[in-house]
Image (cartoon, rainbow, N blue to C red):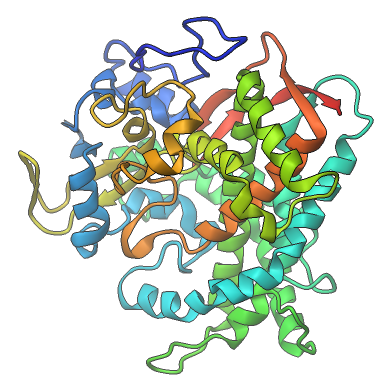
Length: 463
């Protein structure tokens, strides 16, 4: 089991109350059962000792190292990042949908795209786009008014986050239809994103992976819709504020002047659509679950939100005053990081602590285990937003908390996602009370992202 350390309860919590966690195997499953378990939930690969040790090494077909040690993570993600590219396994799962955009590209091709895209996420551009977040928060609140019975807040947050990323990515007259995009992304992530036994056995890439073939077919309509959107935006008159697609079309490598091709634009547009709405929706969904889990935390955040907002929806100018709301989101992403585990392949010999790393070794970065590691965190399984209070957060090692990664490949949209999450969560908490439903806790399941399997079903009471 995950380390269950002492927890100082809030009002309305029992002494041993802890939020839901991934059940960790207490004994080896064996290869076949292990693969079957990984296809159900990728985090089932984590052994108990990953939550109490800095590095866990072993061999299943190939040598692997699970790294939960902040200094070693700094080396893999920052200091020697070029020697630890994304693993072939993770690229194989994502490439049919995301192509060779920023998310998957390596080397010089990644560097020039990164240089070209960075101005897109400059504060001045994001500030111009944030009214869309306020509108989406208002729309989400309007949908919840009058709802009776349990509500799946996960589906509501997916809709809200997708409306934001679609609005800021494309203009309304050239946007990809929401139903086309949402259906394709959801079906792709739940099919092609599962672990393949052929990958684990290192079967050559030219041998087809049936789930990947199905995933590519599922995403084909979305790619065609993206191509149409790009052609329409190239022909359209530019407007202000410019959607992200316009900014990408106009972007160029500051060193060479090169601009993105239609294929590169499509790969990056789909990357933003997939990562841009999934990450925020998950942060919001888990935050709402945790607020219902701990009513005292919810009430404290509500008081802060009401003091800042009154009866209106939150805007960008309110975010600096919503510090406790932000702490809830930070803690939710500690307990349930959207990218709960990523993988790298060592391309050069190295040493991490006392472990010899050989070229070709698989290096797993299980952020879920890092964020709940007893060597790194006090009461690692407890829900405690105050660990991110300003006076305490400054003592957190930068490489102990990695919901957005770190180093040269840190998520470009981190600021955008956090601002959106604060705006939406504060607006909802100021207007509604969320109550847990006994027996309907979500189950943390990682396919490509750490989703609340079964949904986040809560009772919603307007205030």
